[in-house]
Length: 383
Image (cartoon, rainbow, N blue to C red; front, side, top):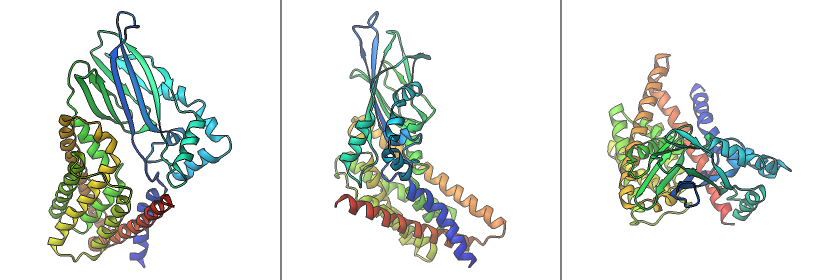
């Protein structure tokens, strides 16, 4: 009975956020162009920012990966709710979007912002099965002094991490991820190295953004005989993940469709089952993370197709290197944290073997529930 109760507790913790969360959330994307402005005083620069973001989640005041379907449905369908939320949104967004030239804040002009009728029409156009996310563009403009050398940008916190491409003409460009509450930096006239930004993007892909990725890695850790074996599996998984991501990014493989998401859920269920059994041969447990790494890499490539198309060859190499290093660092941190939690629980009288099997069973059931949920979403989108 204790085993069953502990497993149900694991399951509740794992499934709660997974089933309520935004099913197909996309991170915000910003393209900024800095160019000469002949109309400006003294030939100032002009910067145009186009930000594509999930508007409904912004209007409920949450990041896309946190906003839930019930909250979004209430916003979109409660009489007058969408119009009331959308009316003050442009000014609120403009106050939170901040641009700095050499440390001095520069005022931004609102050029375009999604209206309630546009948001509703786009959601209706996408259909019932795919009504979220509703990705639309907001456009802003500012003038920069001609002698500006460093431009910094900070986005509204409710957008979460924003994948950003700032460029000056054809010779200066920075592609980076800008976390919530932080400033992205661009040096005019210089090529800004972005390996560190891509590494942070890889960390974010594991936790907190990639909760399904994290579930599978926890399952692999729970089934490992030792911490060394768990880290070894993590590295093998990353190699598989990196291979398929690279093949899609370089055009050797075509991007996959939505069918990959149920398949990823199946890998979570199977990983949990292996952790519950705790009796699979070592060779199998090395091949499993490699093969499932292939699948998870295809899944990420599908969600990141737009950003990959926008990367030049040199930036693509940095992205693949930094991102995969970040993924491996995130996985290693997750494995160490899970090992520490198990050690803490055993110090309070828990049996390590039982805790591992309970966690494995909970992950297996969570994976099955997510699989059913995603299959239903996929089938409904085709009817």
